[in-house]
Amino acid sequence: MAIEHFHDEPTSLEVAMRSCCPRCGEGKLFKGFLTLADRCDRCGLDLSFAEPADGPAFFVMTGIGIVVIALFAWIAVVWQPPIWFHFVTVFPALILGCLGTLRPVKAWLVAEQYIHKAEEGQWASLGGHGEGGFGLRGRAAERQSED
Image (cartoon, rainbow, N blue to C red; front, side, top):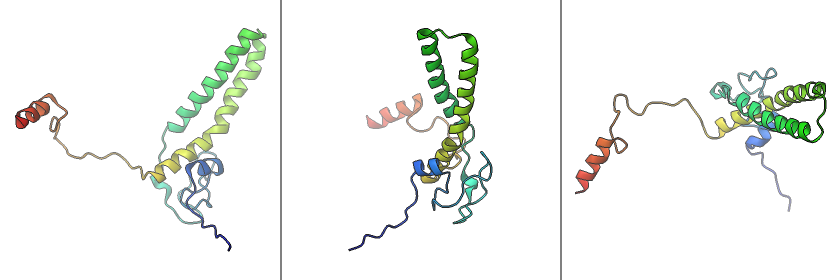
């Protein structure tokens, strides 16, 4: 008995590694190096929902920076190479590491936004500050109603 493989939506990791559409897994996610496409060229998914903002840059710079600088510090203590060695190795490692991981991280964040149906935050109520059980008055009112 043959087992058929049904194509499901790709995981966020698959989207990150292949830079593909988070719905169909086939179309291109980017129209430039970091510019998102307007819509998927295969399934037509409108990608206007995707707004990872500065998240990818922050995660990439933080992660790559910690790894490269930790390695730089270890090499500096253990081998004590000349300063030119650090200029020749550390700066290219930082630049190439950031550029090499920025696109997959951005694709991953877009996939996470799609999977979790992320959207812009909206107010539940306007002018209702202090209502409910979070403020001091709200807690006091709750205690009085319990008594």
